[in-house]
Figure 1 (tube, rainbow, N blue to C red):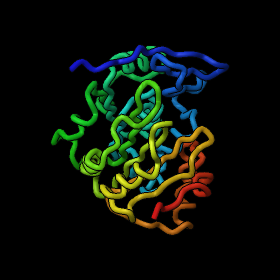
Figure 2: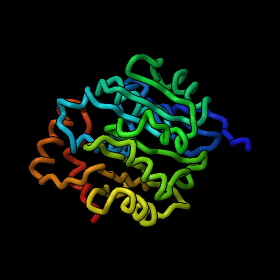
Figure 3: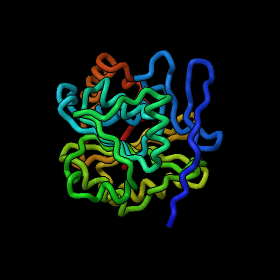
Length: 247
């Protein structure tokens, strides 16, 4: 069966470039004068896994994105955090757009963009147990609901992770149910392993699932948040006001 792949285009508004998949819905963005920073608030929150690891260990870790979007996470992990980074994207036009319009670097020894169906790709043995930061942002061209949102899919995601690895997932959409999605994530990861942000103004809710549940104390999280802001410019201290264990 042929898979429908929407047309990819972009628009510029002020100093920000937006990615679209054939509709007005924004699928990603980039500051034209700071292309390797993360512009959207919810995308910044997809980096919340940093709260659970030692900052010094980050360049030795492996990040994977399911869904490339405008490549904000992929670029940030590869260029700013200096991590080994893998992105899985179904639509080759999105990859071409990111390389042509959104400053995505060419593949190298630490960056690999794989054109594939994420659901099938993540079941390949080569990826199991290798990912420290899994970032899931899989939406159709109308941004109506997550494309992959089953308990089996989230269990496959958990299988990718290292022992102290985390999944961050964006939950958004007019047709989706946040509570149902979180129930599936909790069933796959365990209720003690799930953390969640409050929704952004735009309605994006970022949820974190830990491979191994931990409940660091607020002072420890505050110290890490300050380090994240100082080293990488992310507003992590603000996150702690709207981020807590789900259960």
